[in-house]
Image (cartoon, rainbow, N blue to C red; front, side, top):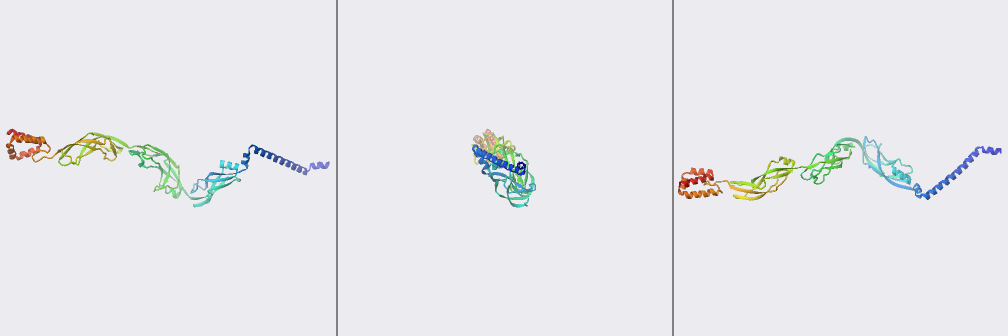
Length: 391
């Protein structure tokens, strides 16, 4: 009995007891897990499959550069890369949903110039494998430079409809910060906000446009601008005005020895044109009437009223009916004007009444005849009447 009690209090007993209890615990836990697994398979077999299956999924991730961005400027790299992740389905799903990892390109130990760099993932669970597309990138490292440039609006005025003009364009951004490699930034001559006017534009246009950095030849320079877009407004208004003017008719191609008197059925009209042209327009315009070859007498014809001044687009009247009176302005050797039929008849009657005494009187006094010739048809008629009375 003493030996048994001594055994119960011995270290060996305690070890054997602990071993037996451990065996019972393992048997119990294994049985419980098996039952739970069987129940899970019966209740939700897809859940068990998702926990134990392998899954592959591809996501797009931003590329991060490990470099002093305040001192250096890097070009040639993609903004985003594709990452193919493979591993336990639940872990892959959680990782792609949260995207709590990064894709990096370590440029910290590279010098100026062009380099080929391997991309690496950081922060992925060790149970996951991955593939990055592309695996490597080609970059150019240069010294960084930053300047400030004003923004100019660029448009094609030829797209405007006739009679319209562009006012002063406005932008939401007056100046931008231009950043890039020193060699590129030094080429920037201007920053423009290009806006396309529709054909025959007649109304004010507002649009958000992408800003462009250009060199002296108008070519785009590879730099980064902040901000990169701007809202542009181009005011478009009518450039036309009008004015009422009188019409003066003047002969064109007039012949020597003839006088012309022209009247028309259009006394005034309205001129339409640009505001600057209308402001220079006088109170009357000249309508030239071609009188070449017209005989003595009255002629009627139609003339075109066409603007000749620059900037005058049209007239309210396009044609006019005119009356042209043509008379002769030369006198013959007997002191009678051409075309004065009443004076000629009076002279003939006086000659018949006076007889030979008029002829004698005319022959004796040459100066009197010359004087009558200068005074025109009325004086000629008066001289003829005196001769008749003496007879």
